[in-house]
Image (cartoon, rainbow, N blue to C red; front, side):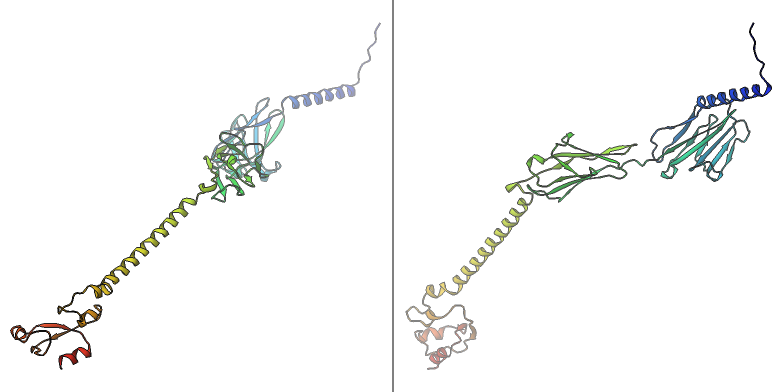
Length: 335
């Protein structure tokens, strides 16, 4: 015959509380809520939803906070799904937030300041809460590749730099493929460093700027390595030298032309002027054609001038003759 001892009332109450505690702990594990970001990496001027999952039971109250804790100063709003006016603003409320009956929260027209820690407290038959910390990203700008120095020649030290705003990572490519293994990069991957470029370094380079939310590619940059007579300034130097040479030749031609004209006018005529009087020894053979002559009006025929005949002088009217401005010539006339 078996015998079972009766439990006392105190033992029954202890067992009851123990059961309730285990059940509550199990329900807390099962009903643990969670927050998911949609999308996971939001960017400025877009929207994000803080989606609450894992809720068990009917929701009575929803409270959202922004900050390190659930202090009332950090409260965004209180949402009561069953009330006629379900939303009650908190001290951190702003109009771009929208709560939902399932406990989720949407934020529109995001700014970088909207990032941070958010906490939700859900009251069903039990109270539960969850938190999430996220960042609002700015999209990367279109990267630009620049060379230093801008004029590149063989054996120069050259840097190619990729510049882009809001980039967390830079990836380089050459001719559509990964960079050769011997190419040296800066610590942050923004710059390719050539200590002495050569023809094998020539090609089309491109960089890609990334952050966790976006990416953008640069335009192709053609790196040309001229050498020898193919340097980029040779054409300019040749043109300058050619211009100087042409100008020098032109100046020489002009000077020679001036010298020739002076020779023809002032030197050559002295030997070629025929005698004006028909015999040798005329004083005009020794006269310089470059000297200045005076115009003298001959009013009275000079009767004693030889070799003119007297009869010829009488028949000729008064005329203008060129007289050499020489004292010896006047002496001859007055003799």
